Length: 385
Image 1 (cartoon, rainbow, N blue to C red):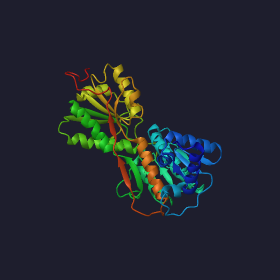
Image 2 (image 1 turned 180 degrees about the vertical axis):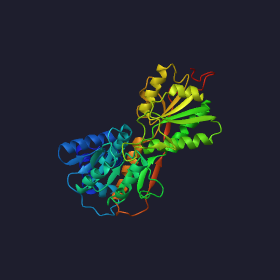
Image 3 (image 1 turned 180 degrees about the horizontal axis):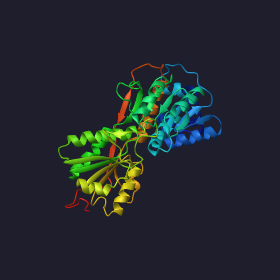
Image 4 (image 1 turned 60 degrees about the vertical axis):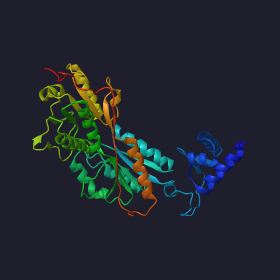
């Protein structure tokens, strides 16, 4: 026989008031009813002022006194409920905003308050924001520094290694041997993402490939380095080249405005991708990031080069790649999952003494979303003058 509503709600209250925050899905499993039913009960109890509701979590109105070794209490929930953490991301960065969304879901479910800080596009912008958030009581830090160049990154090493609170880097990998080498981090394996793109093009029969990529972020530099290594190592690739995807895609502004690629200065001239494809006899291009990729494909069409008939294109980032007139095949880093994993790692640290346990460096693998911008090269498909 179905349990009376009031009895079920009293049971929900008893569980939450004795244990503290409990996931709605856990309550549903314990009470042997649907998640929808429990969610409705929690909403009614919240309206009556008897519970507090978060994203997928029911919380007691008053704090629960509970022993640290209580079997039904998760350490991260006991330590984090009501805590404030600072989350710092660069302004106007849609890629990292998806990462932020993933982190937000996990933190809010754990009852953590987020103090979001948006860093402007200037060197050292993150430090005063972090210091202000910590002075205001933030007990942890999730951060994705802009790091447009290696000098920007190095300038952040001393203070970021000494924040005095649990700190996790999102979508950033500290350089080996640096002051941040032992800092917790969660990021995408961009070598693997680049491998997926090159391998896909090779499997289709492409042998001459161009990379047009940015060089003003850690992701951009990782993609460029990976492509250079992979293309040089694959015997199927008979010709490859690396160019900037746009004149603005270089590090700066900052103390390293005079930057160069190897021994040659950056060419700030707008990229004529159609001319480059003709010059190299290339039939495929990997383009980083999405916005630059869409703009370059538009310019190719204006110059009579059709994608994918004349040139197959793979974009890297997959934020807006699917929205083009020709939806672009794209490497899709697990952006939201990166945020979730980083937030879970921060919750783990918040539940333990600072500095306890080894640092964790987590890498998640991108996937390849195959759409309409890649195909086997047609005979004579190299763009003609």
